[in-house]
Length: 193
Image (cartoon, rainbow, N blue to C red; front, top):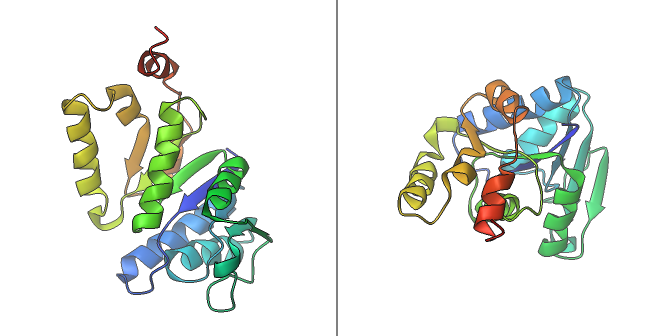
């Protein structure tokens, strides 16, 4: 993987552990030569992950929409900032630039990006790894809901197992590097088999 897209929250009103983990992930990506692609913001975990990568000399590409490309919100220290016309274009551009995806804790926008990415993998639109960095057990309730969806027959177990999760960024990245896309499950899901 040469490029990882990170989805994460932009709120500044969260526990310090989240900021620390985001900065650590940014630094890890830079130290391992992996380009960071993210939403272009300077607040919350978005700013922390970008700062971690920038301060470690990494390449960072932000993708932002015009209404968020402001002095108050946009990060100015990036390698490059792409401006997309709208949220759909922003997500498409981030997907285009990435070889894999990691969701840090966040809210509705982060979940939207995460689940769209998982859904695209489920339907065969991409074959890239998807992971969640589970700081402070943030994603435990979501993981339980995903497991419940498998138990109830709404999600194939192969698709659930294809979403990596760890509370350690090095372990998460290492696991993602072993990813093998569940092509057989995609064909079964699309009724091709």
